Image 1 (tube, rainbow, N blue to C red):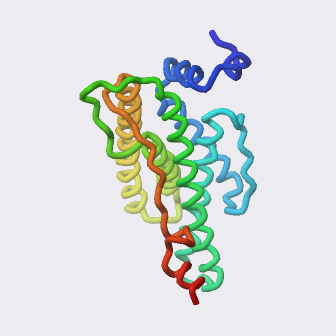
Image 2 (cartoon, helix red, strand yellow):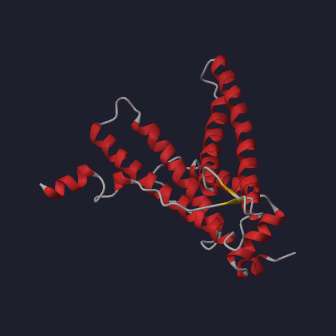
Image 3 (tube, rainbow, N blue to C red):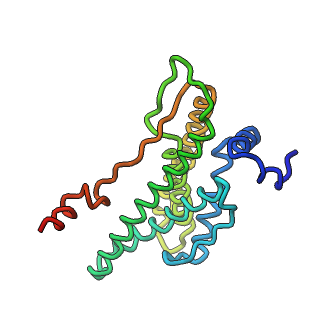
Amino acid sequence: MISGILLFLLPLTSYFEYMMEKFSFSEKCYPVFEKATDDYHKTDDVDALVRNPYNEKGIEFYLYQKNWIDAVQWHLEDIIRDPDIDPVKALAIKRRIDKSNQDRTDLVELIDSYFFDAYKDVKALPDAKINTESPAWAVDRLSILVLKIYHMQRETRRTDVAVEHVEACERKLSVLLEQRKDLSLALDQLLEDIKDGRKYMKVYKQMKMYNDPSLNPVLYGKKQE
């Protein structure tokens, strides 16, 4: 058994291989997402300070950070849909959501870099195929799914609504739990295929043009005025 101290001293790739032998990646990351979701809802405040409990050198740190960003954005999306919201406040929240989307994308790309480094020495088979999405974007979907399950479970426990509402939410929760099982399996199978050379991955930087002053015509147009 490898001690916690020795795990910390392992190179990134060796640590990754050790953890993948003990657990599937979905089994490893799902509890981290659940902890981040639970921690956020202790205050349920979009301005709460994130207190990431994981070591910054480990993948868990970035998984926790990813889910925290998703949780904050989830609730910003709720707030901005208030029909009585002040327009000035709504605009400020919209700008904050835009920044959150960029932070989320940057973090997904960082997680993909982690996978890319872990599998950099794998020789792809001659007939290896590429997947429609990278592993980290599947991780992104799993993080958001944790939030969907959390909030749907909360809806099933409400006592201030009709029985029909609770029953409908229970049916939706059942679908979400099945989706969690399927998505977790698909993610683990993708990583296994990459590890065995049956699939290979590429990391593409997301070309978010609306945040780039040199690519958004509204922004670079103002410079020309």
